[in-house]
Length: 129
Length: 162
Image 1 (tube, rainbow over the protein chains, first blue to last red):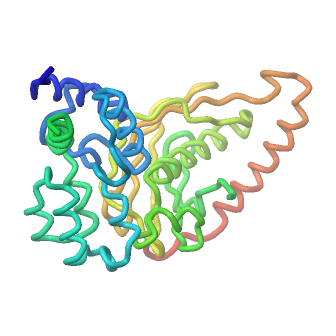
Image 2: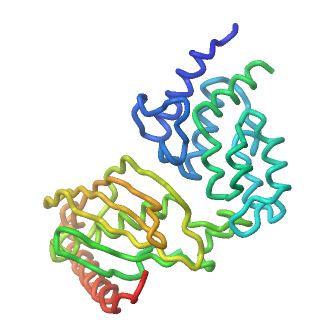
Image 3: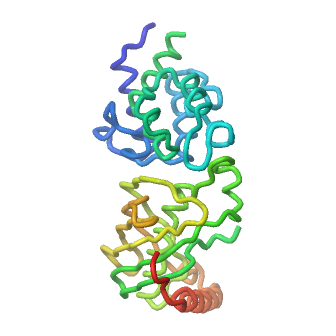
């Protein structure tokens, strides 16, 4: 049974609203998980679990939120993402738009990659597989 | 881990506002995994710094009457940037409501004058003797410890620039 993009959005909105304690109205497509919805590292774990349950998908560690990025000195140096790190992000997040980050490759900008849209794109790609 | 994040109280207007500082050190154990190549104070500890500041405001305003102060709710929590080792997280917390058993606050955390965290939160307070009269001696001890600790946190002169 194919799930429409609207249905995916509705379920993702429920997940984020529950996980982050925000009103559904705040969960707009372009809202960033950290900047707009107040997510922090512990929340990303919770979001992964809830998405797995909501969509009956398996999300391998690091596939949605690339854990390795911040634990590996090849990918992060000081406060910047290295070229190797940007490459790794491109491979890891084909569903994300990296143009802004490539222009300003600061680690502090990385959380902006994770918008509600990114999550929806990811879930759709998992459902289509 | 010693779960007391505030290192210094810079300002305290009784029952109204508190300004406190948490210094972030590479020696904090959780930084080893958060994250190995990019250590930053976890967001929950940024929030905890705001919460502990609110708790100190309550203790001082109520003369340490309530020995247990817990987070009741946190909302509109916004994380804007990271705090790295070697930096100070300076929090400014305003009390919006202070009742005997509950209080509400609005807080902002700064690092080098940039806003890094904001939240509205509520606390719940009580003393152990409220639950069990036999614990009143524990309350006395906790109150005395808190009184001494507050005096210590306020004792140091504020840094020239933070």
